[in-house]
Length: 148
Image (cartoon, rainbow, N blue to C red):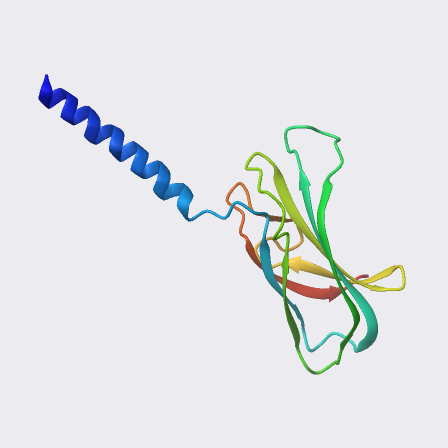
């Protein structure tokens, strides 16, 4: 009986240890780190507004609008054709991560109210830039192109 109890304690300890180990390294915030690159082939511009947004949505409920977690703006932004422009950013540091929710980032460069450029995630080109849950990354790269 004592040997059976020891075995139970070892197995129970292993499960507790596994649980602590797997959650200890996970970030519990909605923090997303990234960088965007404007290729040297993109035409020059100045005085633009860079707008990066992080949204949360419930993938289990169809038709429910996404909720804005945070918006980052970079004002009076410029790019020179012939030279690659790269800038790092962080968004969502203060939000609490909810594992059952879906998260995505949007990136636009605006001239007044008009979107002139869009950023596409390297890990999901031509698709929604999903992040944080369901195996999606918390570190992203965005390639910027002109809106057509």
